[in-house]
Length: 219
Length: 217
Image (cartoon, each protein chain N blue to C red):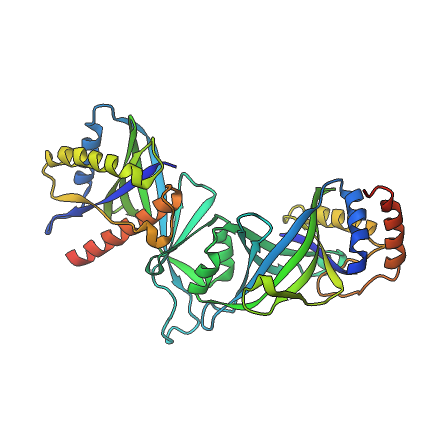
């Protein structure tokens, strides 16, 4: 599997995320010389909470337990406990098992809805973050993928170079914000240098955590 | 969903059973070494206590993990008429940190065991798996290298077949029919209904060994 970097949009203080900014960002991608639209993409992230018999007893269970499904892995599901830096890849039947156990319940679900663009050796997705039940835009992400290489270390200089080009394109638009990459700390999760869907799941979880933190700071 | 029957056989007759199964199934046996870890939810987690099993296949070069949830058995007059147990069962393959994940989620070790033996997978009216194994307990937590038989001299035989709400009757019938061939050596019944070893086992085993001896290299 080839290397992906996921960056999240950080609005400048006082500004908001809206569909106008999403449209401008999409135009930046489309302005790349050989950019071709290549279909849609989706992932869903669900926050789980322990199902406690007695709510008054302090919970010792993880509060950052989440699950992710990815379109490119229709038969898989990913569970992450961010605080413990652990990711589990399982068959999607794990969801049926969790439902039967009833020890954790899904609380909030968010969709990542992306438009994919092919551009030679690179692929980009412009991704909007929306609630599972609703339309309001909660955040914007971009995903950059370098097709020829699956080693994260080897892809790093090439991705950084592409990012420079991307930032230059973006700067011409003078939008109120910028894209930030959250350091995913793959080694903490004991993941190898060869890129996999587990790496993708961790990046989307990390990007969302950053989006939530920025939104909370903006009040 | 799955259909299940179980029985026991003396270890001295396992070789004869293997010869019989080889002849009936027409496939090669597969070695089996499965570490089964049974976890229960900790206090206050979930409306009722829940149980989940993690199975680690130690026979592979790289151990592989499966999460298994066994649900309630089918009840009622229909269920009583069927000689096999029909129960819900869901499995999911999982990556190797599944045990750590469940511990972090608040599950605790209830018990664990090591199954060592062999299995046959074949199709005979249904996709059937016959497992013959000794059940071993660990003297230290998760120490599979230090396991001792729970019942020395006796091994467990399980016949299982996946089923659905639409096919369980047909699958149960296929399993029952197959089990009749094993009757001289062991009696298979619903788990929880113990029938002990079969009195004809020794004679049947001797017969199989003398027949099979001619082809053994």
